[in-house]
Length: 150
Image (cartoon, rainbow, N blue to C red; front, side, top):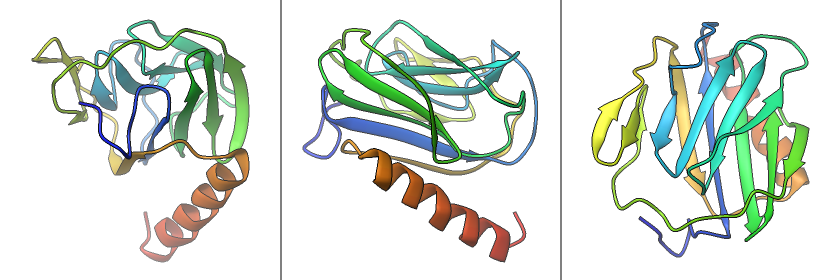
């Protein structure tokens, strides 16, 4: 559900994925209105506060790394991979589903589904980030994940 740090038009969601599995029916994090699928064939699929998937082409077809989406307005969102933008979307935001997020799965109207076999090594969500903050977050997570051998 919405909170002061994760609101319908002021939000972000990201994860650090450690294994490469292509699967459009596997969701790494979220619920029906806020989710990430780090690799569906050659796309990163995001649900940035909407029930409709925003698909952005991956430069390199791998789920490994740091997928992230940012919602900054009712018709403004951006999708990132490893600190670099994959593109923007004007997909309209929708009210949140009032259910918790799942990690390595997807909560669809309260029911767990789309279980992921990818290794989710970190997950985060909160208020919207700028492009610079998204790049800095990736850089810091990459440094940490390298240090711990992830």
